[in-house]
Length: 386
Image 1 (spheres, rainbow, N blue to C red):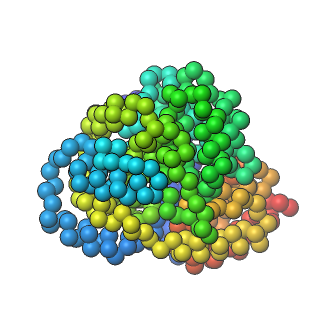
Image 2 (cartoon, one colour):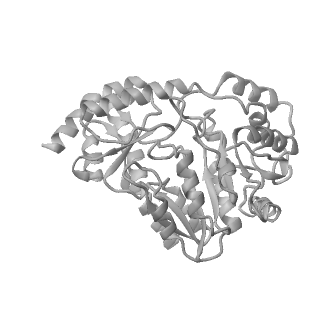
Image 3 (cartoon, one colour):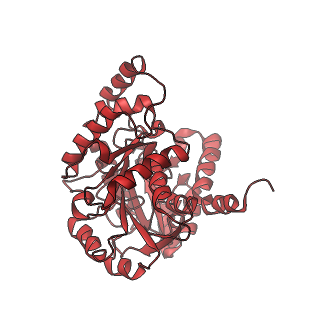
């Protein structure tokens, strides 16, 4: 066979998300777009703010579309650092910023820069399924530490999972797939668990930072934890997922910050990214304070929670992102997912996120679809409980 054994294994592990995507395409072909209720993909459907569209049009004709420094345009890094100094409440300068091809590209750049073969990276389950692939890309091993029943980190379990091979821990808040936001006390608990482990890097994956509701605060990892960095993107908060633009921000407490920054820049080139997209760097710098209308996602969350409540389904209420992680009747996420397909409703089993017994609903779809799916969700929930 031409493809590698590793890629065959990857394909099998990601098959549930792929299966839901393919099932959605099949159902839409049979019944039409309006009769299929696809909660499976976290693909933002709200258009980018008008100012972002204007910036794309303005810069497209003005800038050079050639190569630049691997870390990105100097003026873009300066503007990102200035903005980041405010939102993370630490002092950042251009030398602390490396522009990236989205958060996924940024995470690969970081892991390439820090991992030796056999090193371990702790992730908090449930976690974004790609983490395992990213870690293995660079010779590392994912160590899964389950969160508590409220999907919040268990700091004692984190401490017990640390070994001499632990190189990093990935934090994702607001979280995919649960929508939970880690409180300041939770972040400080993680900091305390790592107090005597100064060589463990905390990687905060934050593409949903602005997508929070009801006045919830997203604490600054860079301020709370000395040996930390942030990887983020414009994919969710200004709906530019397909443009692949983001950045890495190194916290001021990293001991070997200059060496790490140089490694990140070199990794950007070695991995073939070369540099983040030229046009999107300019657009992001001009629109750092832009955001989609978060009230739309909040309204959809509330509608979906009402549907789930009426169906008698349990979940931890999400404070951010656009996901709800729902306990499957009888604890069987595969059976629940498969049963919902018969109502033309698509969700992703928790098995795909390293956490069986739950399914993820993504509510980045028009609220009329959420409301139209309500009866089907209730029917399946009741049938599986009887």
